[in-house]
Length: 382
Image (cartoon, rainbow, N blue to C red):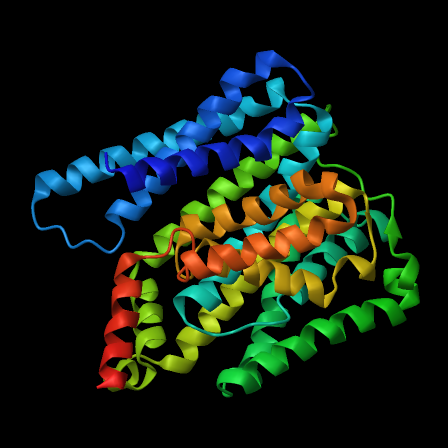
């Protein structure tokens, strides 16, 4: 191992330990779990960095890489499932929030990462999903959570289709401004429609999901529930990436004109990615509503849209695992920096700038993307 790699690993492990140690509450018994989590995350980051964007021709190499990937994922899942047994309720609540943001980041990654469409008002779909669940289960008590969950996703998807039909005919900054306007329109609409949404006061009394006599009302139980939903969403997005639709989205992202010349219906593929992204955002919004038990328009500001976009960029645009990693970093890191009081956001911003300077293509960004960017820069200079 080179001296540079050793120094890099040392700083990485020390940084991850500093993030997790404040949540231990001074209990030495938590150290093995923390070390296992940090070691597993480090191995997975190294694996992603070494194998992303590498063309492999031999079947044996593909099999070995797949086995290492499955081992790393299994280790991280095992640590994630067992973490609530040795964690305080505070840490569980923070991690549950990170899981919900990870679902949002994975959803946004479909549109921003795979098709290259910049969306600045994505939190609007999140709000639609949350309020659909709140209205159906608490405001009018029309159905239980298990019926409201898919309906929330479908309501957000319908909004995505209605917005996407006119908006996706625009390009670049103009499309971004339209989506930004959508997010603000949803928030103002929810504030002004008092009879249905409760206006600025929001909706109270949203109950946790239940299965017969069993209710998911403890932080630990809801954490596992959110983890299961995240696993399903990540699996679905990963399968989409490797499907013919995912290949078409990537082709559109790389060169829209060439994709259209090859017979790909660019508008329909854009609309499909936009609506699917909105569907998963609605699912995340439904989970947020039942987790909080209360929702109001103040929870769905423009800042939240920017935060989710930062998660995708920080983790690595177009990388499924990177979106989840970025979500956890941006939710857990500020909690650790809370000890710095008024300097918390200053330190947080400095860390973000450092990430973007040293990893401009994201923490788990593909080497292939980086190499293509360098080639384009060299061609432009020539």
